[in-house]
Image (cartoon, rainbow, N blue to C red; front, side, top):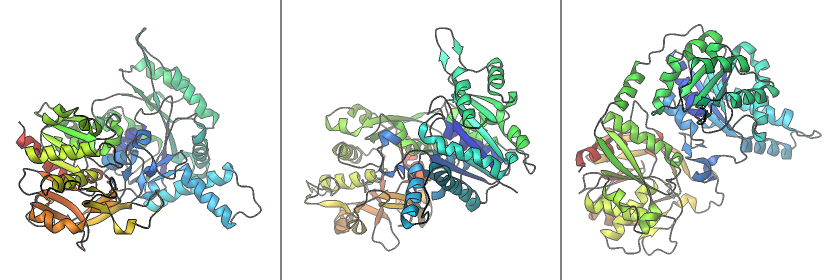
Length: 535
Ligand code: GLN
């Protein structure tokens, strides 16, 4: 069939859940029997978010092919349960870099390079290219930012042009807006939504559907008003009240008749009925009161929880499957160094240290690993979390007092974590880490092998440093198990401590492969251990 395009734009303010909405829509259409592709267009100038601070951007989500992408791709993969590739996310920076390198090569000799048509054509090429590459029936394209931003204009212009190129009957514009609530009068306001639609129309786009986000219940009258002022059909106004679980969003959309409307409007003849029963059961299971397991999450960017989005979601997936509620208590690693926030660690049923870069807070993370080891508290270390677990082991068990990673101390006497050999000659910061899917072989009889129930697994990576093989034998003799290594044996992928209920670290990022219906085995085992050891 000819691909249908669903374009998601945002209005009024950002951070209202446009990505989750796009992801949930993808799930509904997949459930109706269509092959769905999804793509995020980011208007900023960075080539990718890999070099941006988590404070600026939130989590960097890594794909199989090693692309460092926007965190919305995590929502897409988790909701739709697909594996995306590099072409599913691009930025203005990538588009400009491509056009400028062509210009230098002489591809446009004699011409003036302009936003329209050169930049817009490159954007178009990437949107159509991804649609073709995936062979999808329905292509969801989300434009980052908010309508009215100067930098997103070329992207919106492309959506406008595509309407004629792929046929009006094949495109559908979904505008996600925000309805503010005025406390003094107890009213929900539609005016910002109206203004944002005016802004969109000025570019030549009329929305086909409006998803109106709100913290408060939205009644029929409000929807009628939006329909009238924004010139959309009444049943194309979908109110979406903030819910306590992200995974409820597809159900809210389905119950509001969204997929029926899309099927009709886009003339999706082959549609079958959606079977949302498994999702309903998942949400019910998540909602049901259950015993709570407390997890201390020791990080550097904990005031911005978006920085650990996939870790948080993975904990929830594993908790639902283990029939517990997970209470995530965020700990600033740097505060532990000042003897603060230790009560959170002491009250925890499990300690998780996620990935990170740079020296700030690292001593706090090492101290948290020590606490977990000495007090036999279940511990899961992801990437840097594995590295600090090894540093603690060297210092605490082997008495290598100044053991460290050469990332933090170049002259450490015992660099138990060291730069990977292929990294020595690298000077560029962007896209140069060990990135993406690599195979890991598991040693039979270990906790890791038991968790996975497999001999070989493939996991996503993002790191420059690794366990220093000089110390393998000494660590092993002292009770550390190298339960996962690369197929040639040269890179340590998983470590665990033998005499401990569950203390495991992995060099990769399991959080990128956990799905609501298929929790990641390492998170499963971690939560299971925390539940069992619960004091
Ligand atoms: N900074 C460490 C490294 O580069 C860990 C990276 C991470 O946690 N993603 O190896």
